[in-house]
Length: 171
Image (cartoon, rainbow, N blue to C red; front, side):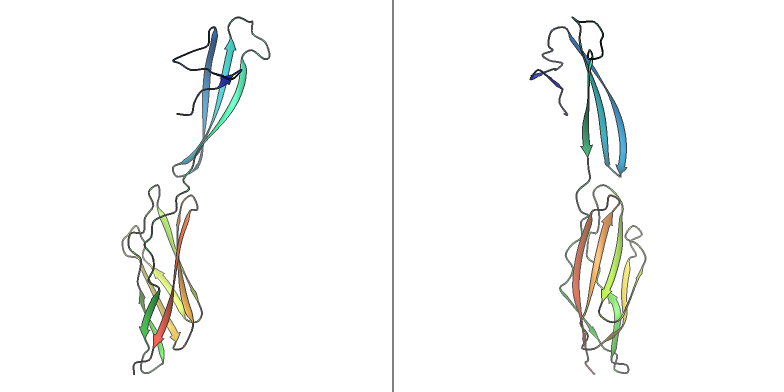
């Protein structure tokens, strides 16, 4: 319920209309992004006891916003991922864990992964396809590497998680 306009401090409502006042409104809907929009509601209130003038009916525009401000859902990342170094190259690589239940209540989401430190990162597949995979390669042992996952909905709301990668040399 977005209410009714006030005239001299009194509600103009369907249930208790002020005597000899009539009113109407027109809505213009402007799309912002999936499930987010604004309505410009232009109200006109007319005093039926007076003739039509520049100020009768009175006009006022109400702005109503329906916004998706909720971040997507993504379970927390593991704090530390340990990878074994190759015994021949003293480097590590492999697939990284993907958090469970990546989703948004209102729209599709995009997934991005970033690596900081040394090494390379690749993302294949998609959340929607159920085949999302993140792989790292060429991670030196004794390096300080961390990965950031960013999930973004179509309205720009983001959820971020980060974790460190440690390379162990078990050879």
